[in-house]
Length: 326
Image (cartoon, rainbow, N blue to C red; front, side, top):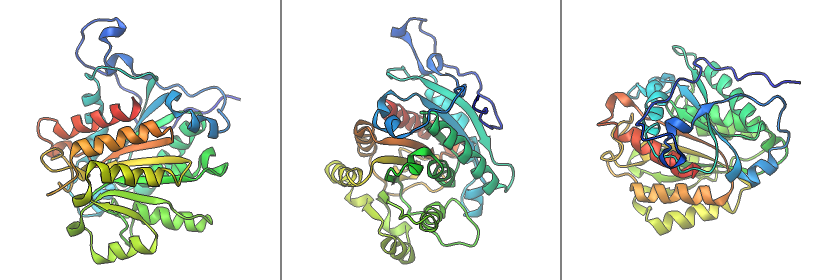
């Protein structure tokens, strides 16, 4: 039986970029990315797909949402991020050994965050179960809970793989609030995992001590969250930290909140970092994750094009995505 088409609000749009020629030696992202067409039948088991992650086609899915940032009293504008990241990716030289496809965007209308997250989650589950590597372009960091819904519903979890969540972020995003927002997704994940009889395996690289309250540190400790402070993020410390976390899991969901980077590198976010983790360190973590063969799903969140300077933050996001897929 044929698989249903993904339910998206905005279908894939044409990609653009510099033209140097049609040959493979001139190829750029805009020439390489093709629209995603769901397979006629599900791939079945996600286990082998994870173990051979380097061969999986990547599928880009936008999540256009400002609702979570608005609820968290941040600077809105991240709903425009998927288009900005695609625009930054388009001109890049294409050096990947995998296919890249575009599935279009799921968008959140007004304050309908939970409905948007649920729809994006279903799309992500469909991609994972079809043997694809989803690359979600947020959106505020409420994107992460949409990603979690997709991963939690996938065959990878149904078949018992230990899936860890690695967050590159200045914030824990473990706020205990009555209404979900961009500041609550990982506490939502922990509670959902507990309800399913599992524990959330969650680690964060880049935590800013001045930007997380004692209550948030206490919640992190109670949940057994591993974290590395931004001031401790040397290249070697980050490598050891990530290696230890990767050793505990069979597959990895990587989420990048661009505010983990210094404001000079990533000014176009809701909450620019006064300190931040150097880009070479974040880039090395991305290479380490890619080389592990355990990457199941990834998203990039919190780009706010309205506050970006010369497209700087969008270009950084594009560079990190290219690294992760390379």
